[in-house]
Amino acid sequence: MSEQTQSINLSAIQSAIQAESVDGWLLYDFRGLNTLARRIIGLPPDKLLSRRWFYFIPAEGEPRKLVHRIEPQALAHLPGTSIVYLRWQELETGLRELLCGSRVVAMEYVPRNANPYISRVDAGTIELVRSMGTEIVSSGDLIQQFEAVWSDEQWALHLEAARGTRSAIDVAFQFIRQRIQTEGRVHELDVQQTILQHFAAQGLVTDHGPIVARNEHSGDPHYEPRPGEDGMIRADDFVLIDLWAKCERPGAVYSDLTWTCFVGKAVPEKYTRIFDVVAQARDAAIQRVHDAFGRNEVLRGWQVDEAARSVIDRAGFGEFFCHRTGHSIGQETHGNGANMDGLETREERRVMRGTCFSIEPGIYFPEFGIRSETNVFVDRTGQVHVTGGPLQTAVVPLFANDSVWSPPKG
Image (cartoon, rainbow, N blue to C red; front, side, top):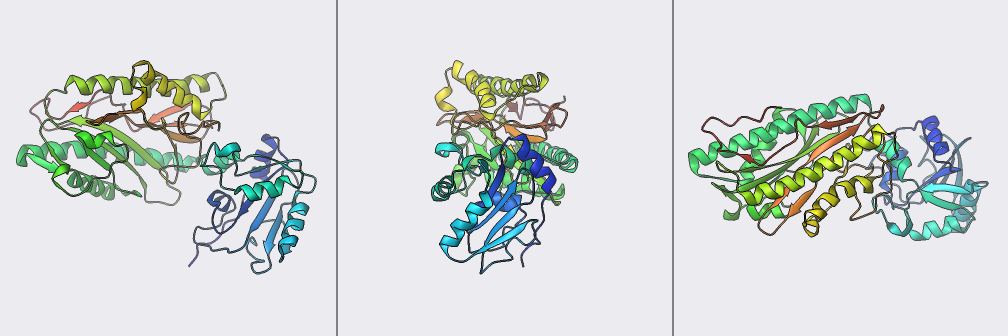
């Protein structure tokens, strides 16, 4: 059974449209291609609509709908008048009526598909709208205002998830140490299951199992543990753990952290040298956010990426930093707000107040890879919060002393 549709906060959306200085927001979908538009208007993921629909929200005045005769109630939960079409000619006439008087509208579009996370409207539909004398601009910042800005409750849920994910790192490190002491080895999958059990005990859920990666596996940013002797962790191995989870409650948002350790008493210099560069890049990106909001400066995602990437470039490892600096965090691990990206895309969306994102630079070689990940939340006052406990300052040597493993204080 489909989830119940939800109406929209029309006044809030129209205020945002006015702030963007456009005449309106034209939302469009065909068979679920534009998931962003569906979410904005409150259509549940499993609600099937087989015909094209448009929903136009003007900066002022009453919204207008364009729906097919087979599905005249498709947008019945939304405010506004309806135009019903049957033939394709009627669709084009109806769309022209929707847009009457609008010179510039926002759609889920970015020129040259420079940001595919936003570009959900096909080129033909863009051509159709333009043929009616209407200019189209990207709805990227509108999307994140209603998809990525957290409520006070979500901020509290994130902090709860952050405590659970951070403690999961300690549980995993302790488990590795104990198994190495008693059996001399432990499989990546066993560590992964221990983390998942800890999540369940903490009331956390995740969309995918965490990354537990030894030695050369850590050189693959998207490595997935798998059965086999190759996944056995032993003494003197390097291990990267990347985990993410959220509270099992409606509207909950994720926490996403990455830490690294060495299964021995002293961390070899080849790891510490690279970790230090990664940590400097991480800290430079965080400082860039602090500086921008401290000066009340408009900050864009690519600028945060640039702050981290320039550190790694100067150290001579730029070619080994093969992904963006961070991603938006929301009800999905990868949310719909601005990403910290100047590599895969040039993220022109603003870093908005009320949003959260990861900072996770990395350097990856065939033999090993090092990533350090934390989460940053900018509250409505512009205060910048780094969550998930104290930042990792060095690769953790699991056997640096003879006592039971305990997390670093700070």
